[in-house]
Amino acid sequence: MADLSVHIGKLELKNPVLTASGTFGYGIEYVDFMDLSRIGGIFVKGTTFHPREGNDYPRMVETPSGMLNAVGLQNKGIDYFISDIYPKIKDIDTNMMVNVSGSTVEDYVACAERMNELDKIPAIELNISCPNVKQGGMAFGTNCSGASEVIKAVRKVYHKTLIVKLSPNVTNIAEIAQTAEAEGADAVSLINTLLGMAIDAERRKPVLSTITGGLSGPCVKPVALRMVYQTYKAVKIPIIGLGGISNATDAIEFILAGATAIQIGTYNFIDPEISVKVVDGIHEYLDRHGFQSVQELIGALS
Ligand SMILES: Cc1cc2nc3c(=O)[nH]c(=O)nc-3n(C[C@H](O)[C@H](O)[C@H](O)COP(=O)(O)O)c2cc1C
Image 1: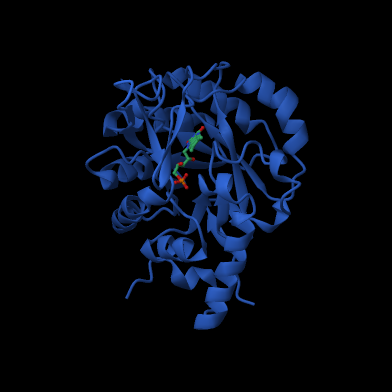
Image 2: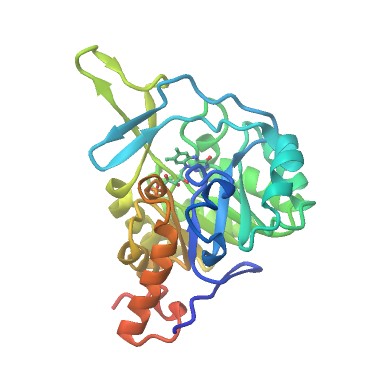
């Protein structure tokens, strides 16, 4: 069987298949459905320094080939994560990584500092791309100076693998990725959700309480692939690609576009075992095409 292992910064992944933040809980919710040790890693729910209630309902709506969400980073904050969640997830036999968000630079830094102390969390994913919060979030990730400020500050206090999650709601994804690389990020992940909107024509009202929300699922895949491809041409650090992946072929396409690893998001809601199926499908593809290692496929478009 071909070798599926890849590296992201100091992180060694047994395979390139990861689950996306906000779509896989803390991982423990999935133990009855699959063997978590079979995937390369899990990005747990977005965590902030202070607890957050999230946005008012309705905050999710289905679209023809994806969903719009405006959850708004609901979570109980870093203290709760450390006291109540960490002990339950620290012995899961895969890379457990935390998605960190904030309203201010100070929030991000304080959260990252605490994450540094947790032995079994080898990496954080800095979410500078959440479209569903009033302050911070995407505001940091849509211009180079905002991105630079927060990444630089976090890099000073966080000494393990730092992954920066990029927003697709920009005109030039490559320049934001280059900023992340210049400020010391070990990798970038992309994409977060695309800003969208749904309207109820009968009631003549927006569907979501927040009016706009983040679009995800199969419909965003072509945009995500394009952005991974453009980013691969612009930076040397590894890219984690995501957006609309629903099978192994989708995952292979992202790797060919330049991703070292991939994440599966919305599709976990449709098939909770999808990530393991994608691992098997990548093996099958590599064997069928005679590749020894998945690394041979990274950016290997002919
Ligand atoms: C319900 C929901 C909650 C999400 N929460 C987060 C989050 O807390 N942090 C984050 O960086 N991304 C979050 N995302 C974005 C996903 O991680 C992912 O970037 C996006 O959905 C695109 O991938 P997909 O099309 O495979 O879902 C969320 C997405 C959904 C659908």
